[in-house]
Length: 213
Image (cartoon, rainbow, N blue to C red):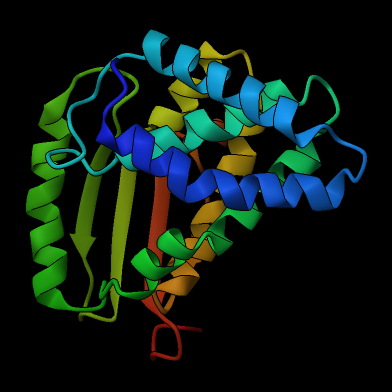
């Protein structure tokens, strides 16, 4: 796919937080070299990744861009970063101001929002049949304080395989717990596509609600 506004925004919004994390973790690192290599890797990965539609029609282009960025930085570290440290980098990304603000303003525990999401998922699912596009199903709960999301296909899984970093996919999945917590929710799931399950089953309830047991 070609570099779009989505990929540009993700780079400029998230990379400062990522590089700050690297500077703190590896005090003797040549951060300018890492930035340069990361940006080159990012552009190359984008160019060899199939397009899944614009982020206006398919908002899941945003997490795909996030995955591209994380793997680009990991490769730029040239063996200096292990799997656990990669996971810490992913978690640190949540502190990026734009990302945190975006999740904190969401209102997922609103029935109108949930119904709108169902319709948006239909549009996003039809944006591309590529394995790099998610296939998402939102199921309404017993009231607006709970809902279920089933991912039948995951773009990050396809990306990890493309870049020969299957071992890193589960570390990208862990961010779901943190981002959902930022929306006031609690995530419970039994399996993920990355771990070999048939789907990623997200059960989400509002923190402190009667379903939060």
